[in-house]
Amino acid sequence: MKKLIIATIGMLFLSGCATWSSGEATKDGKPVEIAVSSENQKNPESVELIEGDIKDRKYTVLAELEVVVNKTTIFNADPTPEMAGKKLQEEAALLGADAVIQVRYGSAGVSVMSWGSLEGRGRAIKFE
Amino acid sequence: MISLLMKHSNNFFKLILVFIFFIILAGCARRAPDLPPAYASHNDEEIAIALGITDKDKSMSCFRIKVDQQKAAKEYEQNEAIIESSRTHNQVTGYIGVFFPPALIVADNDDEIKAQLDTLQKRKDQLDYLWKSKSCR
Image (cartoon, rainbow over all chains, first blue to last red; front, top):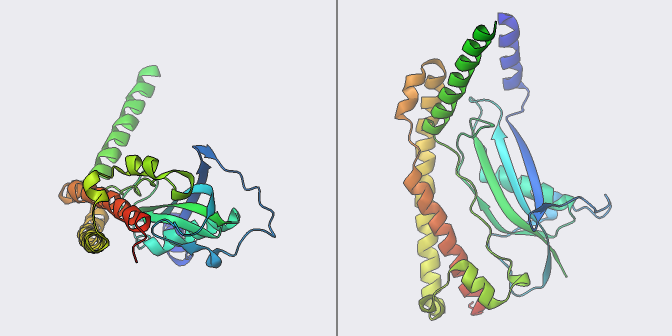
């Protein structure tokens, strides 16, 4: 039993699973289904992350995104805003968004799910 | 049998309470601030009301907005740095706390700083809106 616990902890350290994350897309408080075909989904890296809003270009709001990045064990490093940003890009790409505006992050700390959680929020948009 | 079950469920309940207490002591995560209304789907009046923009704010010059934006951004960074340094302290406390739970008492939750960050984010949203609505460059 003791060996099993040690092996599990060792595997967690070596597996590279330093973090795990979850994401939620909503619009007007209701969950948004991914209705975009895989061909229309974007490359996450091409999705722009913008801190504020855009006033000089028209856009359609696809969803409000909320992501949480958690560290796997107490001994892993805390999740960073870059990690939360990447997760926001991934979620937005699934919806076929061009950008995520009003991007903002919480502060890493203990949550019910993990010893180190960081939340990120933003609004997935598509330019007209 | 029932009394044994009650006894164990009581212990389990106590364990959960102790765990929640430690989580509170060990420095809770701050949630990401709420999103302001989308500029594209609301008119100026609705946005101004939602963001709490005053007449005084509306009369600000582009220069003044820029200065306040820089000030808010700097303050935001400073407060984040304070939380980050506490987090390092809390992490070490957490490691020790796993083996010696009373150590978690010295963890710092930085509630005041976290509240200030939320207020600053709101101010940043107001200034961002004013900057764009006045077409400042």
